[in-house]
Length: 137
Image: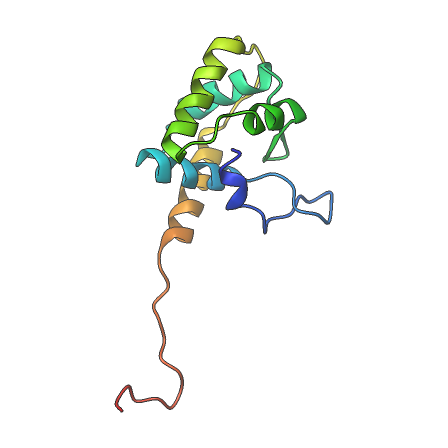
């Protein structure tokens, strides 16, 4: 979610004018980029429950936000390549934070809509040549 926030900076929460959090499609995009796969609904649900229960994220009205504790965890990670950072943070999560017991449900239709949004956003737009330019020199 921290990495996804770079993809979602332009999005705005409906209750504020400043950018806040990311949408599920942004999380799916980042997961696909990092792991070359889109997480299944139940995998997302389990991960979010753990992060919510550990107090590292907050989810409100479909917006995923990192809590101050989550920010501190991310900022305290060792500097390294992206894959190493992800593995390091995963290891810290496993060692320091007990799986949460938070209740959170991701509806199948919400997951399907986020997957569809991700796919639509990831389709490259065709390049257009400037008007009146024939392409010949």
